[in-house]
Amino acid sequence: MKVAVIGAGPAGLALALCAAERLRALEIHLFDSRSLAHDIARDARTLALNLGSVRLLQRLGAWQPQAAEAIRTVHVSQAPPTPVDAAVTLSARELGVPQLGAVLPYGALVAPLQARWLALAAAQPQRLYTRFETPVHAIRSEADGVELDCGDAHLAERYDLAVVAEGGVFAEQARKSLTHDYHQNAWVGTLRLAGAGLQGLAIERFTRHGPLALLPLPADDQGPRAALVWCMPQAEDDIATLSDAQRLVVIQQQLPDVAGRLTAISPLKCFPLGLNVETRLVQGRTLRIGNAAQTLHPVAGQGLNLGLRDVQTLVQGLADAAERGLGLDAVLARLDRERAPDRWPMIAATDFLARSFAWRWPGLPGLRGLALAGLERAGPLKTALARRMMFGG
Image (cartoon, rainbow, N blue to C red; front, side, top):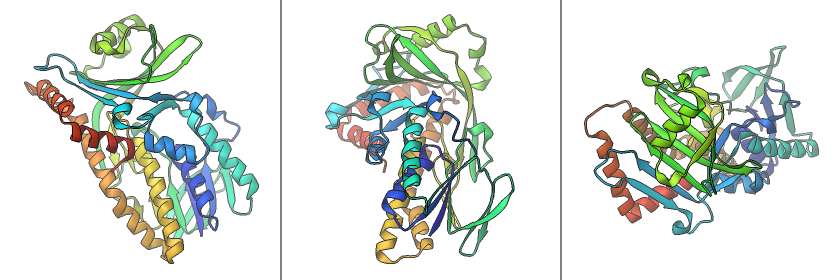
């Protein structure tokens, strides 16, 4: 079987590697428009992975623990005013796991994945093909496959299956089956912290304007760092007009005491936020995974984790099919069904939370605080939620 994987980001590379190692009869072509000469390791965008994703990358031989900061505790709270002390704490120690997840730069994830793929492709050139600097302009469905319009010459190539893993950000995406503009911005960057820093603590603070998250990053020679994700409604967003000192003061005022003291802030980048979801992962012999299938609000930090679970389900399905003699169409139909119980609750939950920050109902922050306080006291429910966030549904 001949498979095209379109997009050599984290989801596409993980799929190419998983399939290459488990499905030895597969011919795999990995496409990307970027050049191999581009130093992807320098990409400093921040990624948050759950424990299931970390374990997958460890199995692929592409995990560099020194480049990542383990998340051992998650603190979720509602900013005042609230009627109760509104916070939920999830602890790896209480759950009996070494960590809840990890935070690392985009380049520190993609570079080792890419190096691992290139090594496999060099060892098996008869079935693994690296097609960088080769954009895919169009995918045309056929009765038993797809035809790709590839490269600068727009050559037509036929494949049994095309897997689209090119994601991108909401503002640059073609609109999918289910879409909603939240009219919110995410400001992202890096903060410096005093003392010992967060030490494995991830913080999410629900403010009047939207969620504010700090994610622990590996310390560098200047000391402790944290990644910032700061969400604001566009109609009230004046962050661009603030100086660095003013931004630090505003952020510090909104964080809980457990965050410690902020000392410096990097330049921030702004991204519009929205929901952009395919109702079905499979259309004929074309499959979409990761951000190509579902682009979500960052409030739960689950976008890439969903994509990596798409990868595992597809590869397991293809492996099962090879053993049982099932056809590819049956495998794809089963994948669409199996992924739904994981995808749709996460899509619905993040969409509800994202929309709720635009509501200005009296007492809503208090209700959100009561819900957090109740969850903190509901041990089994909190454990079930934590395990879903770590491993999916």
